[in-house]
Length: 180
Image (cartoon, rainbow, N blue to C red; front, top):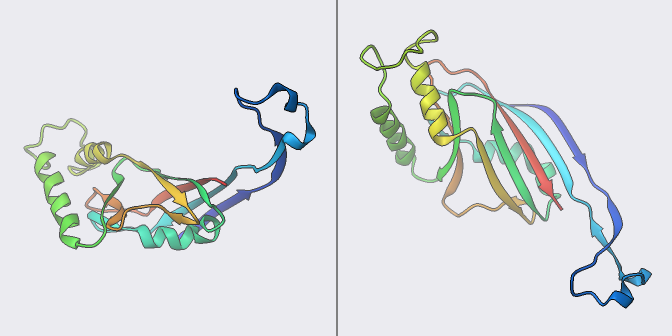
């Protein structure tokens, strides 16, 4: 796995907080100004090595790469974006490998491949159009909450990279963290 870039900005500024229920006599009082943390941003581009066709649990690989930045966030969101149209991201079972195999079997049954498939787009091979459809079904982006420096996922949840091509290539994943 290769990291291509990283950016992190933080600062604290003083801001005036006013609500609809604030007593108007205190609005101009300097003591009514509260110090609030300014949201931080961090972004990394991770190159995942080629993986065989199927669904792959990649949570630990990703967390290892983003942990130094992730640990600085108390509350926020992590956005994951895959730069490809023939692979996808999803959140699913992180324990039993059979779930990943069964998901691949399901996808292959509902999206036909080969000479009898009805697809017009075949220039890049018989697996390409089915890969595009499968990618659209799961999508290329995820959003996960950040709490106390960690991805806030359920006990049995993990991030999957689903490779839909027979001859995979390295995949580029952009991870953007935002929060306080």
